[in-house]
Image 1 (cartoon, protein in one colour):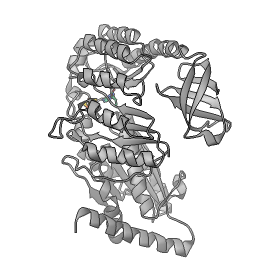
Image 2 (image 1 turned 45 degrees about the horizontal axis):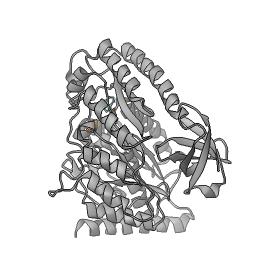
Image 3 (image 1 turned 60 degrees about the vertical axis):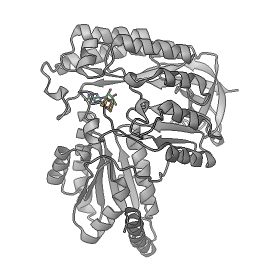
Image 4 (image 1 turned 30 degrees about the horizontal axis):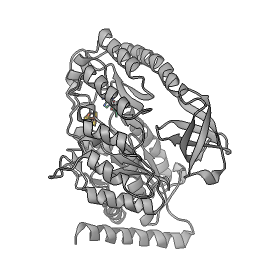
Length: 464
Ligand code: 5AD
Ligand code: SF4
């Protein structure tokens, strides 16, 4: 039996069991999925959801009521890891009260033997453990667990085999599309290359087919996902670049906006900068993680660019794409970071004038090169610098947003506000979050909004 047949057989068997139960009890089996970490994980959860729904499970946001709880985990920083252990600990009691409850843990944490062993030895109420490369096997794993009652651990250590799994997408108008998996960069602080394996690009035909299908279903915005999208195509075996892919996606009727995540400065080519300037559907937003403004620290991080290289790129992109929004990731307190190094970061953020930034305290990840570096920065200093960085960044975000005052922007309406049913929120092409009054039936549509109020993190306005 090939893998696909095995999957279909398992889906049919689990579904038959679920349907039978449903006939008996009158209620569907419910699943609850919690996702930590990046957009790649969010998209993996959409694939897991699709597999579960095809087996007859329905989603719930009430953990207590669910029959199957899945944690899709992240390993990038220690906090994310500790949170999972805390949550799993809290489930012991629920499992005692409800022994038929199934619990699964998957995602990046499970790709690490050390983390896996902690779960296996200390959290015995976890029933199924799987990784980031074998999501397609979930039906077989559930089936095996239901038949044997034994804990299932199934991880593929080697490189990702590219598997096409459909997704139960969260929105009906914007979608994530994987274009590559893994990472070859080995930034010295980062665990990702050890968990998600080597870089591998998906074939352009299958990416384009997926996006064409999305367009036919009415999707307007797509976000191309990869750890390092700028090096897309390198593993294909023929000449095909990320700019080539963008050009093809730009031709697809129905798609109005193209976004992508994440770019590495060392691979941001002039060809791509030109493509961003020329292709009308590619949004005026670039997320370009800088991590630090100090050349000494950048070298120790193995980032392979200098502060000057980065500023030059910013200059070029601002010239090629007027009004572009630039966002970034910054790590504070990398081993050996001095006050002088940190000041270089402050200087860089002033020069770039970021629209927004994700800021992180350096977190030791065992197994990475930086974990064994001397001169780890004491927590107290890390926190002080972190606060100072935010104090520098927030006024810059506000200053950048002020440029939108009294202008009219195109917004893709995404959802109603949590606090007020009559208020919608959506994003501009530049990625700014906008709140405005409007009817629910505008969700999924592009609307023109005049900005009347500006804050550091959001804009407010009214439809014109
Ligand atoms: N400590 C703190 N931040 C980290 N990141 C990756 N690894 C670490 C770490 N060990 C941050 C980087 C990266 C983002 C996704 O997470 O800024 O760009
Ligand atoms: Fe981690 Fe660097 Fe790869 Fe990004 S580029 S996933 S930070 S190793």
